[in-house]
Amino acid sequence: MHDRVLSRRHLLAHAAAGAGLLGLGPRALAQGGYPNQSIRFIVPYAAGGVTDLVMRIVSKQVSEKIGQPVVIDNRAGAGGMVGVTAVAKAAANGYTIGATASSSIIASPLLNAEVPYNADTDFSYISLVATVPMVLCVAASVPVKDGADFLKWVRTNKGKLSYGSTAIGHYGHVALMEVSDSQQAGMVHSPYKGETPLMQDFLGGQLNCAFFAPSTARPYAESGKLRMIGVSGTQRLKNMPDLPTLVEQGWTAPVFAMNPGWVGVIAPAGTPAPIVQRLSAEYQAAVNTPEVYGKIIDNGMAPVGSTSEQFFATYRKERPMWKELLVKAGLDVKGA
Image (cartoon, rainbow, N blue to C red; front, side):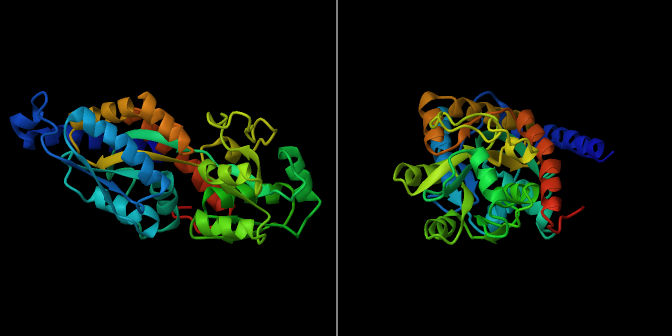
C-alpha cells in the first residue's frame, strides 16, 4: 500500500510539472528557449571533494553543449542536507538544480526526523551520474590477502579488532557490522567525520580495517601502506580490474552486492517535464562522452548516466534496503 501511495504521489508530481508549463510563457517552451540564462548548480559539499569534482566535470560539458553557464554553488553543511534543502526550496523553473548523494537523500531522512525535505515528493530526479563503490582495506602488516583470509582473521581474533567508518550508519559501518555479526567477532566500531581523519587513524594503527573510496585507497595501496581486499558491488572497477569484488570471493550478504553510494542530479519538484527531460538528456550525454567518462573512473566512481525514471527507480529500490541495514545496525530509524 505504501509503495502505491508513493507511486501515485510521484505521478501527481509529474502532472503538476506539466501544469507548471502554463506559467513559463511561449518563449520558454519554444524549441531552444530553455535555457536562456545561466543555471545555478548547488553542490551540497565543500569544494574539492569527489562529488564536487565530478559534478564540475560533468556540468562543464553540459554548459558547453547548451551554450549557457552552469555555475557551481557549494552549500556544505549537515552532511549534505543544507544544499539539498536549498534545491528543494528553489523555484521550479529549471534554473536551479543540484547534486545529491544517496547518503543525503536516503540515509539522512531515515536517521533524522528533522530533515526539512521529503525525498519522495520534493524533487524531480534528473539523472544518476555515477555509483560509488567502496574498497575493504587492511594495514599492510596484516597477514590477509583476500576475502577468505579476512574472515578467518576476524574469527581468530574475536574481541580484539576495531574498524572505522566515515559516520554512523554509512556503508563502512553497516558492512563491517555485518562481518562482525556473521563471524561473532565482537569488532568495535569508531565513527569519524570524513575519510581524512579515518585514514589518519587507520595508517596510525588505531584501526584494523575500514572501507575507503577507491580514489582514497589506491595511492596508499600502491605505496605499500595498506592492502586492498575487495570491492563492493557486483562489478570490478574499470581502473583496478585486478581487484575482485567481495561477492566474487563468496561474500553472499546483500550489503556486499549493493552500491554503497551514488551521486546524481536533482531539481525542485514541479520543474516542468520538458525541462526535466532536456536536463536528463544533457547529463546522460555528458557522462557518456569519452573525456568525462574517463575522468569519473579516475575519481573512483562508476559512470552511469541514467534517465530520470531510472534514477527515481534506483532511489525507490534502495531506500528499503538501507532502512533494513540501519535497523539491523541498532540505529533509531525514522518510521521503523
